[in-house]
Image (tube, rainbow, N blue to C red; front, side, top):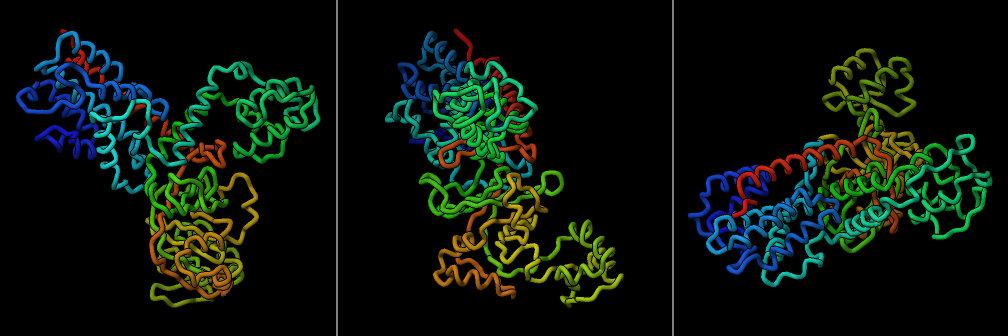
Amino acid sequence: MTVTHPGRPALFAGCWRACPRLVIGLFMASVATASWAAMPERLLWFAQTGPTPASERALHILSQASADGLAASDYTVEDLRAAIANSMRSGVQNDERVARLDRAIGTAIRRYLSDLHGGRVDPRQFAIRYSRSAELDQVIDRHLEELAGEGATDARTSRHLPSALPYRELRQALADYRGLIGNEAFRQALPPLPGGRLRPGQPYSGTALLARRLALFADLPENTATTARYEGKLVDGVKSFQARHGLYPDGVLGKETWVQLEVRPEARLRQIELALERWRWLPYREAQRRIVVNVPEFMLDAYAAAADSGKPALSMRVIVGNARKTRTPLFSGEMRFVEFSPYWNVPPSIAQSETLPRLRRDPGYLARQGFELVTSEGKVLTALSEGDLEAVARGQMRIRQRPGASNALGDIKFVFPNPDNIYLHHTATRQLFKRERRDFSHGCIRVEAPVELAKFVLAGDAEWTRERIVQAMRRGKSMTVRLGETLPVIISYSTAVVRDGRVHFLPDIYGYDAMLGEALQRRSAALQGEAARLRKLGIESSN
């Protein structure tokens, strides 16, 4: 069956996809003028005898929107329920008001499905460059048709929900933390730490309360016995908690761990809701092979199967852009090349701010670091003069670093062309991967296990064995390999993730959670204003 009104498919299908706010405005105008009355249409949610079972299923689904981190008030559920009740009191046959109400239900459920599968706000307003899923419109239409159909399943089923494992895990985490709200273990603060730091074996008056909180977080078995000292399983529980919150798991209860333990479930709930919103933005969710970097987690996951089938085939630590100076941009792209023993072409910004001042102070730095100058004609210079430095400053020459042990890119580079010239690469400073917080780069992403990543990327070519990959990396001569098929790469940002079945909460290193939270609040406020205008225009009017 079709779910758009005959003769007006562009209004509630194509136009909604292009600009939901415009559709709402057009819908309001249609109600005000009552021009719909003269136009033929088929009701989707009403029959001659009253509202159909499909309408009740739709309203039930909308009322449960909070289970997915959405707000039921965004879909005017209570207004629609009241309007249906009024329509029943006044009779439905040939009733123009019921036709308007039918359209209002359709608008609400379409908005919900669009929010659920594509997100509530456009990531581009945060300078996030994600390609839009080509299947999103078809997904929304398919679910709308199923919900409105006579053979629709019971409202309690979840066929309309995203099926991907990361989504399902976050959704369950949302339910778990919602269940913690109001628990007595959070009604009082933990007692102050003796000396500001609690080490294993020290006495502590808060061991019982600490154990209850850790048990609620699933970091400690329920009913774990405690003593007057911080010891035993309680220390193990704190280590588990630290590992899930981006902290070094040493079991020492210091200021940072203390702060995280005092975060209330309501705040964690909000983090998970933001994570669900960001997941809905992600492109390439159905791609079998893809690489996803989560910036605040400092992790890379490589998937070899569809998102609904499970776990990453490969995971590794990464180093990302510095939070204060050189943040890694968020975008999606397609990996096309692998470059072994790469040259590093020093970006102009780094050359101006770092390399040129160093060369002026210490000309020998050029040779020690394996740098060379390249003219606009491609001529390579290994000697240095003041005129050469001025040419670099004017953009008439560039600095590049030869392949070798000191090369900033290490011995391999994974290229997915993008306007910011961001790529994945190895690094000579491997010790930095041992840090819990790893935002040290100029924006590019350094990978901990380059050989394993190269094996994953080149898996379709049997000639690229591990031995050949290592040989090419150590060769010292630059070689570029074009991939037989491009590989999607997504640079993402989520401060709540589920890894190995356990929810992790991460520092908001770039401060993006607050920005997204404010945007969602503005959006909900705007929708509330539209709902008020809807009521004023008579959708909810009684007889």
